[in-house]
Image 1 (spheres, rainbow over the protein chains, first blue to last red):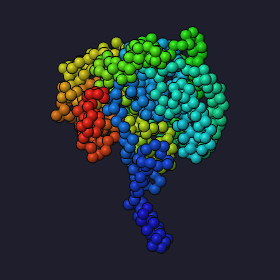
Image 2: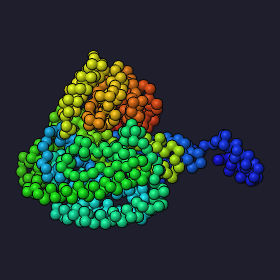
Image 3: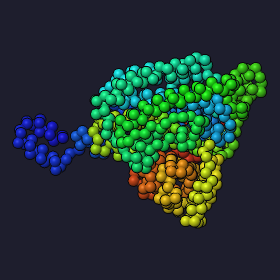
Image 4: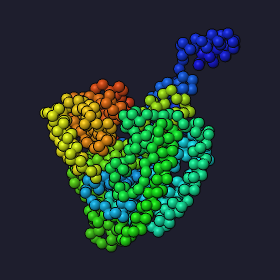
Length: 418
Length: 170
């Protein structure tokens, strides 16, 4: 390519041009293109050094770790309580999902029995954050194919979900929601109003969004058969979540290894056929509908439960006492201090627990040696595992397809780099 | 809690003991998952057997992570495998002396192990023999330490004014 430009500079002559064209077929010249680490087209800090043949990608080398924060090392030095904020910062688009997964891991190690009401509250929160995550991912696929409108429409609803988080726990992006054993406080009436409002208002907007994109000719041309991946390769590469389901494998942790009473809910797992960008988009879209359906069921189940004040397990060992007691009662104050400072030992043991996070199977492998901190904590981060297939996925694709393919995989830098 | 499938657990343990005998050092149920300790020499063969055998069919590598046992002066690797057909999860452990931390790579069995092994090398310094591209992944290339080993301090190593026993694990 460079040679051509040189020729044009020297003065364009058609016979030289044609001669060179024939030559360049034999001795192809490749360009190196550096995409990232900060690039407006990649949503996050990713670097890809691509070997290009014109517009087509021959090879890709990824560099990751730009926002590595050594969570696994820090976790070995923090009491269990203080690890929850670390999990927030893994997949920051759906922080409550990570929080709940971590709490359930510790509860599994402790053997705490969780009341049904807490399970359902968790299901509500987890499905809300799944919706928020999928809304972002899908609207960004729209943006990368040139349709900004859908993004601005859906951002209002994502904002509304963040307002619900705010009602529940007081923060928005990195939530630190819930405690080991349940929630820090009961959901306020305003939170319930907002959840009910979302269930009413979101379907219409989602339908509008789908009318913009799903059968849109431009969008379909930009996404169908773009960056496809086969089910065999996806399984070999450890894909999970919507990306694996888009390839046609109906693996969902919520169904395979139910947690938090998911076995009582009635929902379907959407799957795709070709594993291309359009399928990944459609699977996520359908999952939003299913999540709304699950939240509705959870609300119905919560209505039946009589004890409306139950929001944590009946096990005071690891649960912060209520604030009124802390201020007025000596024992409660001591207990509060002990838990917060991490002076309550956790029994020795070894557990692996996983949840269906927005990107796939989010696993926590926790080893405790009976001390105040974990002896080892390993996060199975779905992004980290499936992003390594990216060079194989985009080989032979055009650059613009590779960009939209990356957004459709929903690679989150925080989760990738830990 | 994962559902404990006693029949499958027994089948896996029996098959492995029958094929590899002494190489299977230990098997136990840890909370809700079967956990098998395999000697370093046979780890590749055991994992290949678990992947290829018609009865085992552990087609999915869930995750892989490193370990450091300072009192035994050993480094370890823990593999989590998942059989999608029977929905059966197991955990395989192996360990190697810290003076000679070499283990075979399993990227030929599961390509997903590629980055996971690089991460393990990056943080524990375990050399995976036969790995296509074994270099640091999350830390910078110039780093010489292996930061997840227990003897690597969390805070700045040059700092002497802070007593770590006051701030979590020493």
